Image (cartoon, rainbow, N blue to C red; front, side):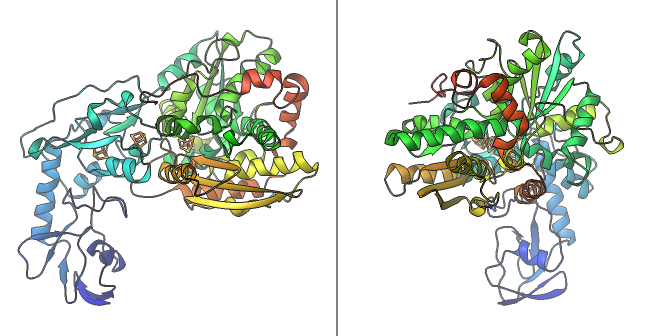
Length: 578
Ligand code: SF4
Ligand code: SF4
Ligand code: SF4
């Protein structure tokens, strides 16, 4: 322990403590901009500088540690002036069109400039040369807004092992761009969106598809259907300041009807359908003991599918052939539900509300058109986009009452609900696999060993004398480690769940942004709490699922299921797929 003084407060802290953390312990807030705890502690922006007695130079508080007897001033005149100059320099290289910026009101640069009481730009504007981004690609970069904080480089390299971003040029021309001279659409980007949620400003954002949705809603010839992914119900209300108790999925349904959708359904329904198909496929593979396809990987995360295709093509056939819940929903909406409505499926416009950008890519894959030859899902919106859609429609969620989701595709089980968190797909699959093998339900919490935020979890379960060895990973860096260990024969499993985003879809790159805060654990707790309180906790007991098999599909892995609900993942290519 060392004794230090910060702004006149004396305290003792361990000797390797960063000045920033020591100040926090003393209740003193030092502003930051490029800093992200444990990920980006590089002192690049110089906003966190502090004065240390005995030294003329200022110290970055995020990457300098304390020493015995250190006396720190975090808000002296010298510090305030330096911070102002540093932020003004950043602003001189930043396109300050805040009114039309997607991050306006939720931008760390805007906040810090306001907090420092900056009222005019003193330095000559020196914007980087504008490079055109492909506005059709789901991920877009605005070169004039990048503040070179390096967070996107760090999260893409160190958390997602995707290495898309790199530092290019030297000296004053140093900037961040796609590495190897690629443009984004030529890179192996998984479209997880983690670089967006880690960017402190509006330099990275998703393609905005809200106008396409509003056009469809206004078209009297279109029947508009919207599906809500499991993880959205824990997050959509954050932008409106609603608590999870207020921001129910039923309140969101009320908002979406106000926006003008004809039917509001639940992706939890098709998550249950995924379990029926994927669980049955797993048991088939187990029975046939086709070692070339073991372990079986879940396939519901398109970010993970993009990653495995780009980096480990030898494992593509290990992916379950089951489509993701988003795509299963679209295929059922434009076949089974079109028949219920007695309408041409081409009159139906399916929108999904999803936690990432990979879903935008997924619904546009040319082979995802099995119901009627047109895309099964027309548009995928992120949670942030749906929040903007609600705001742009001048709908106030706080003034609405909850409204039940529509029938029959609005019914989902607790098993479908937990799809939104890491481990949830595995747990849901095991609940139903147990039933399919034994004919009786397990305790719904029997497989809870796969819950939690650990990056790589393992468990073994006994189902009627057969031991099933499973693994669950979240974050592509952990998936990379697991695939590498599998390749070397260091580990072996029967069934592996992978979600590309840390914490699963609750931590998805399309979710609301709270700069510097990991929101996934809190959102996951909400999903598990909802599951615990539901009477319907097994996918195979969902009455809408039993109805769709009875009235239309006949049985899991049957002919219609094969056509509508499965894909082989070879129908499209990643740019650099080997
Ligand atoms: S794009 Fe965003 S996260 Fe990446 S360096 Fe620029 S400002 Fe930082
Ligand atoms: S979306 Fe994911 S994989 Fe793509 S650049 Fe961003 S962090 Fe990297
Ligand atoms: S984990 Fe969920 S949010 Fe993240 S890429 Fe996969 S599907 Fe999208």
